[in-house]
Length: 218
Length: 271
Image (cartoon, rainbow over all chains, first blue to last red; front, side, top):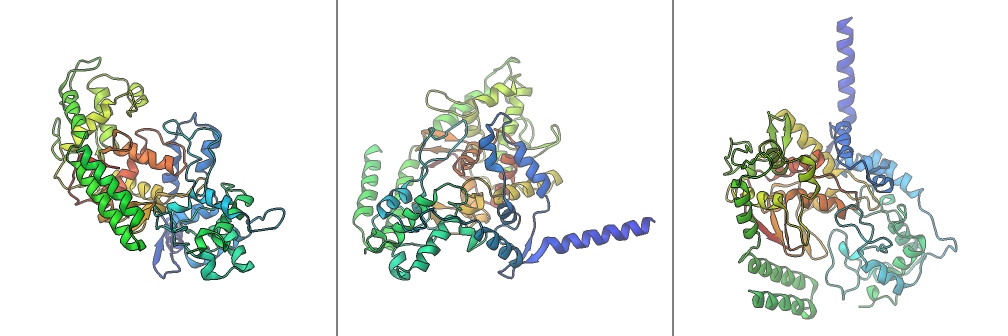
């Protein structure tokens, strides 16, 4: 009896190891964090119980977030494809169906980096508008020199790729849900989280895809 | 000093406005920022907090009218040289892994008789309110200046906290899908003009960890490591973790282990 239990336990252990270690797209062996459940409890227990409910919603995770975290942003190929398919299905379009808006409106949205900070120490004032904060990670208009490098340069985005409907749609989809193209990318899913509305996303698209936008002008 | 600063700031603005070629410009800006930091380090206002902390350390205070001189940060009662550099660590008397701040508060409660809830309510400074904890941590940190960070995390409880810290580092959530790793998981990146360290490497974690506590020019205050990490969570659009909470201590175990071997240069001075 004991022997049987022991063998069963050994087999279970083995199966777990196989599940936890899989090949990622890069070919590197990825290992799932062994303390996930306990670590999650520690993380959640570190917040005040009198936090408003809508703040605490921000620590909830969807499937994509969970998988990206557990595999250190480098999930095995099958999981990566699963994430990308599910994310693609989440994309919604503006009611009028036009995916390219006004680049001058987009210019304001991409440059605006505040909004959405909560907490007791240094929250944003209520109703602070939220921006895309695109310059934090991307070069866009050449005139703005204070740009980050976490994402690629988007200078001449439309000029390089051509001003086709396909590229407009690609740009819209990418801003709406970046994980649909690259699971566990560093880029936020602006549309999925309703951080930007579909209409605002069309303005951002115009800023990188309108031939008249400074992004494509020099 | 102020004149020097103004000159450098104008230098940055001029370099920014007129130089051509993105790369040349980037290098120029980085160069000017380095000069700016150097000029600032001439007279670090954190030195004043260090002196204040030294006074608070020896002063008899609290309901028990006792000093902190018997506080044990892991090297024995009152032994502060190099103590900060080997924290967080497991403490037998509390059966917990503690960082410098949780250990300090523990001593203020047990030795001096202060109430934990009073100490942790107003732990950080803001305009018009100074923080004893910040001054004490600046003083204790400075006692590790020149010492290598040494957090091997070999005790089972420390090892567990390292793994929890690593989990939190990669954990994504919130309306921007952020985790620590998004900004701090790659080499050679920048957010706006601010260089980002890769905190998963010894070099990146070492550069980040060696200079805390640090005087932050933009905030006009000394920030402790807990303040730094709690504010990272705010910037990620998460709610704030509680002061001294285990997820913040776990993150420090993760970062200090990664940084182990790097020589401390504290108090630091930053943007």
